[in-house]
Amino acid sequence: MPSHRSSVEGRVYRFRSETECEELRLTLSNEITKVIRQHMVLALGRVPERPGYVEVMTVTTKDQSGQNLPISPTPKRHYPLQLRFINPLPENVFGGTLMRFTTLPKLSYLRVDKSYEVPLSALEDVIDGYGNQPMLRLKGHGGIRHLLQHLRATKHRQLGNRVLV
Image (cartoon, rainbow, N blue to C red; front, side):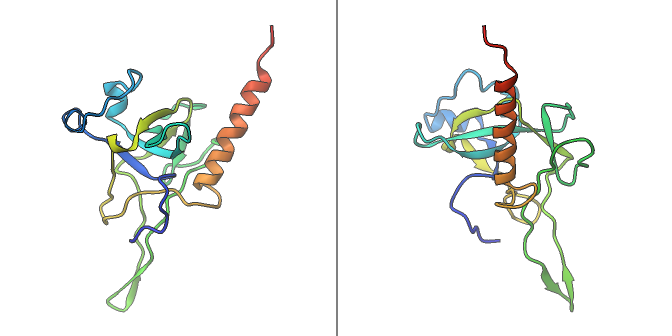
């Protein structure tokens, strides 16, 4: 499916290997541990103050209520929202319509309690079994705009609940 957006926001990536990063002379912050590098990440958008950097959150298979949001087809249950990928256009196959649904290899969640700023060049595209890069819808329920709105509202509530000393 040809890309219809030039932005990185809402796209799923994985970290390049340490060897590739060394060859490219990329250094990552010490907070990007080996454990974090083993996870896929979802790009929230570019970092305006740091050209070439993107803000990402990790994708995990662990259900940690309060820290994660489910990624479809993982059930929404008690979570405030479920993230949804863009699906490729249906294809006509042998006189019928074939729908393909973009999913990750395992039932997954976006870990929303921590984000990281990383060079985009330290990341590589994740490609699904149909040759598509998983990316969130741009608009609508479960899309990248809905996620960013949810993150801003959550951060605002957390700031409002702090006691000033």
